Each structure stands twice: as C-alpha cells, then as structure tokens.
Length: 441
Image 1 (cartoon, rainbow, N blue to C red):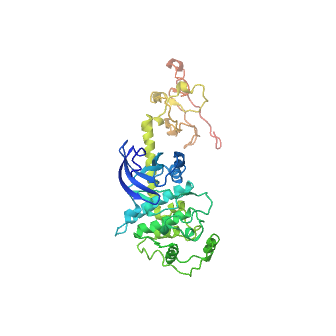
Image 2 (image 1 turned 30 degrees about the horizontal axis):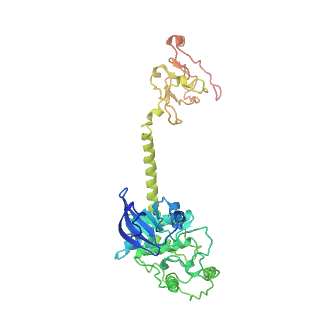
Image 3 (image 1 turned 90 degrees about the vertical axis):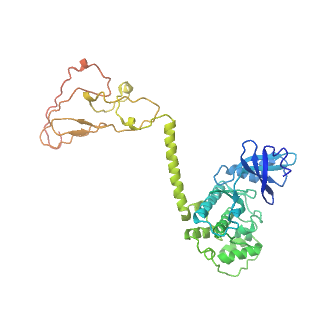
C-alpha cells in the first residue's frame, strides 16, 4: 500500500484491501474527484514505461472488450515512473462467485443460477467473437453485483489466432480442460467453455465438480464422473504429447447422480459444456440459444421491443413534429403547389365541400402514401360510391340505360379556384342515355 500512495495514487483514497493473487493485489479505493468507489488492481511486477503498460495483454484485452455489460470495465490506467508500479482502476463489484456460494447451505434458486450462467456465456461469447480467450475462468474471477455478473482478471488471456503450443500450466487446476491436462499446450478457446461448465455445476451444487489434488488426480476425478473417453479422442491427444495414456476403461457415475434435483435442460447444457472432445464441445454462441435459457431470451426480446417503441415515441415528441397522425389523412387543397408537376387523375369535389378541406401546413416531415377519403355522389337512382384515387368502372345493378346525372358546381383540385362569374355558364350537365350493347356500353 505504501508503494501506491505517493504520486501514482494522489487522486484516490485507499479504503481497504479486498484481494490478492500471484501477480497482483486489489484495493478498494474512492476517487477524490467524483467520490465514486473503484477497484484498484496493482501489479506486483514492475514495468519500465507507460508504453509497456499499454502493451500488456490484460490492458489491451480490457480496452478491446469494453464496453460490454458482462465485462469488467477499465476506468483509468496509472503508472508511477519512479517505482515502476502499474495500477488498473476498474469498476467495483460487490463480490465474486466463490464468496457468494462459500458457506451457503441451501442451493440457489434455479432462476438465479440461470441468470448468472446466461451472463457468463454472454461474456465468453463476446470475448471469443473479439478474438480473445480467457484461459482462467473460475469462480474467483467472476464478479457479481446484485443481479449483474461480469468477467474479470484478463491477465492470462490469449489471442485465438495465436498458434499452439501455448503455456501448459495455465488456469486453476480444478477448472482445467482435458486438452490442457493431456497435451503439450494444444488447446483453444473451447477450454473456457469447459471451465464455465465446472462453474455451472459449482453454482448449482455449491461444491467443486473435479477437485483434483494434482494433475493425475485431476484426470482421474474427471474419469470418475464422465468415464474414460473413446480411443479416437485419446489418439488426438497422443499426437501432441509424448506420454502413454493407459487409462483403464471406466464408466463414470454421471453428473445427474451428483445433483439429482438438476432440471433436465440444465443437465443437457452441462453435458454439452463438459464434452471431453473439444471439437464436440458447445460454443458460447450456441449455448446462449440452448433451451435452458429460453425464458431469458423471450424476456430480452420483449424488453428490446418495448425499448424501441418508447425510443421511437420519444423521438417523435422531442422533434416537435406531429403528436397525432390524424391530420396527415385529411384531404387538402393542393392549389399552387401542384402547378408545374405531372398531372394526376383526381376526383371531382362538390361545391358544398370546397371549404371543408383544410390546407396542410408544410413541414419537413415524412410524407406517407395515403388513400384519400371516399366521396359519395348522389344520383336519382341507387347510390354509387367511388374511391377518390381512381375512377373504377361503373357497376350497374339495373337494366336499361343510366339516368341523367345532375351535378352541382364542380371544380378540379388541380386548378386554382376562380371567380363565381367565370363559372356562371356551367350550371347543369346532362349525360345522354347510353344503350347497352352486349357486355359493354
């Protein structure tokens, strides 16, 4: 703590120590600027420059992966040149999964387990899609705050594009995948899925699944539960490690015996995450689509739909545009605005209706294709209704000839209204009777 206080940590007040690992220690701190609490992870190994600090895998990974709801966010990077001390100021969570289940006697509710595992799979899916795998997924590195879960400690992460062999002794033994135990570093991102499967079991049962005391015991613990793998799988491992696999054939007890109350969908996902062959192991992306998470997916879709709806409504109101769509559908007089444009077939408007339509105030709003209201034309015979947009063929329900249609004073909507005197000659029109010939007129 003495190393951090001078110069490097002058903007933060150290509250207490909350954790320590092989390569770092973690302190709870409070910012003197905004008063917020943060987790300060200080590296035990000294470095030479800020450039070297920015090139660290952990720092690069956190920058690449942020922001994401299930990844711990890096707030600030502090480097003290005099001491060579590097501190990562990160968001502060309440506790890790290990602390959450430690000493607990009753199992967690299924919806709690499901919620946490869904978020863990989301964090892994995001990591893997960004070309990074964690290599040390365990309860201590999974942090929670209320109902939220975030993956942290990216000190062991590696690029998915880096070529094996990788470091052999990586990840905590209890959560180490078979390919990590039985090969000379020939493993990939699927090792994270195995580790997550072990965490899944531990959250449900409150006990570790494979608590091996050493590497050989670790393999034996796996075989006790899952059974010895097929020889074809072991042949894959033999190609990469100069050792003999003389495992006596054994049928495992199975996972269901260890957690009899485990729901069938959860057991199905668990077995897929703990597939011995990494090529057969489920991916994080596929795991998120598993039937075990169906209710969460449906709830997410519903929440997204409501969010989009509320967002679009807020946008309409904040833009100062129409609060109601009714006026868009009202008929309007085009007048001068249509002059010079292409001619469009329009209906006749009766003299009595010419003052009903209100002009639409021109604004920079989206114009919607509309169907104008229908007008009723009164004739001495049956009433016939025409859509305004087009003039359909007459449907005649009686035999013989059409009666004369007496129309009131009419004007087209495409022409500018003129004085009454100019239309004095147009009082009445008569349509001569039409003889019906065959099926036409």
